[in-house]
Length: 282
Image (cartoon, rainbow, N blue to C red):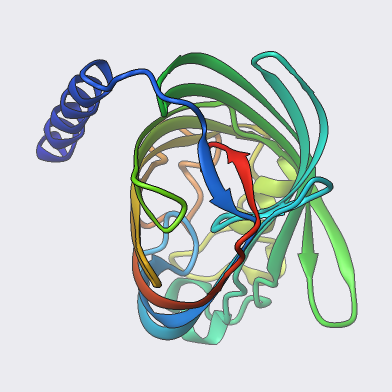
């Protein structure tokens, strides 16, 4: 892991150097709509802490909308609620994929994990801006719900305060690039921790004792990402490391590793980009 954090420190240095060498520019002019289709490769664990890693190649829709009343970006759906000076409050929607326990050795015999939907307010405060580059503090607070096609069941709350740094290069609405990096902490309720890491007495077996977690610290997240637009092509990727070595649930028998890695790469052909533009930062 030392080599990972040395690499992250090197990236931080490079981004800061890029930032302070950038001239003062106005906000970007961005298309209101972007629609595209391409392919992606994703690698992710069944759940953070699992040794079962999945790698999928999938069709990937590129859908971006920058409207006045809501926005859709690569991470989430956002509804602005309040904006003044460097402060913004919005409502966001995010989610995770379901996990089949029969395909996960350590969860064999347990109930499947449904996909989750998280919804709640996100506070964003811009700490620093130079040209198109900015440093931003974010605090999402979300109610988490296990979701199927027929029902939603509450599975607690979480809060994810973090700092994110963005470096951008813009040569017009159809030719631009962005590099981002971030570090965040996660805290969640007892109910949320036990949805993923709890083991009931009916599910205990040799090597998997009954376990119940308290609420509290859920780990650190370190992320790097990039996306590049060149005319009708979009190329993007991300890498995220989750450190669970000091979490409230670190002793759960369902935690096989304290470090989980998630990454993805996508290439799309954007067949539609609106002529109408808006000012802002991507």
